[in-house]
Amino acid sequence: MILVKFDKEIKGTSTVEKYKEWIEFESYSLNVSRHVQVQGNDRDVGQAFISEFLLTKGADKTSPEFFIQSLVGTAFDSATIVVLHAAGSSKTSQELLQITLTKPVVSSFSTQCTANNRPTEHLSLNFINIKYKYVHFDGDVNKGSVEKSYDVFAKA
Image (cartoon, rainbow, N blue to C red; front, top):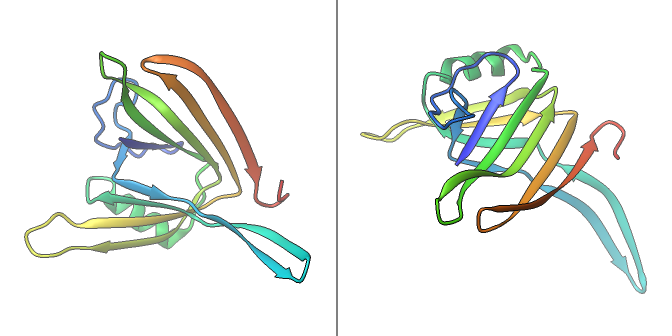
């Protein structure tokens, strides 16, 4: 399960304890790449490029807000994305991944629908800093976490 909360009050439909009214998403995508040129015995490694954070969800009560945000371009202070998974014998929801974006802006909003289906929406978030935290589990036992961050402006 992918849940997102923005610092601005945008109430979603999540009923998960600790994440009530967070926004439910179906998928996300983030890409990092760099140009690497090999010539003879030399390899030139270019600067890294990080994509915008792409999110996909079904239309819901947050749809009009994201539509407007894509038009006005106002930055939020932050957005927190969590990925939950069912762990251990009790199958309780555990936070496996947490990604925090600083100053995200809805840079793109698109919606599509086919007959007799719920509309699907795609959002792109541009950001200036990303914090990426992974929590390791052995069954339902938390074995610790690893966290890294990257500043887009400082490139570090």
